[in-house]
Length: 154
Image 1 (cartoon, rainbow, N blue to C red):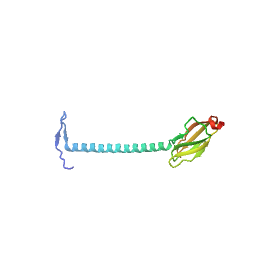
Image 2 (image 1 turned 180 degrees about the horizontal axis):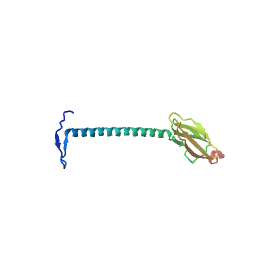
Image 3 (image 1 turned 180 degrees about the vertical axis):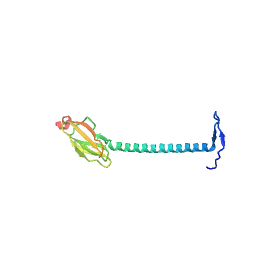
Image 4 (image 1 turned 45 degrees about the vertical axis):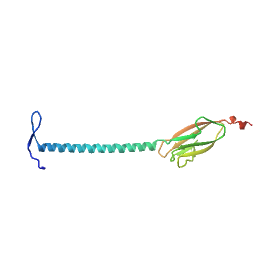
């Protein structure tokens, strides 16, 4: 019993109950054990929420579609030459299609493709996707007007 005696201590309660030192020790030990239990419970809840949050973040980052940046041409560009050089960037691990034809992407994600245009409106449809992601589709209109080229009229 750790050397505690059963001496009576007067409390300051209105009814002046007598409490033993041993009762105070037992109550203190219960409070400490309950505090440790609460701490452990809160600790494991925080760990569980952290793991769940990390896993959710990873699933969302895997499933989101890759980005596509088209440097040239911009949407609604008018060109006078029937051959255009398309430049842009996407994520290196994605596959990229231009009008359903694969485009080579270098290790940094850059691409550079030459395309022959038809007179009038040409719709360039870019489709990028990664292994487990959704597709990202970007459409760009390019207008080829061979009549506006002054050298072609001669």
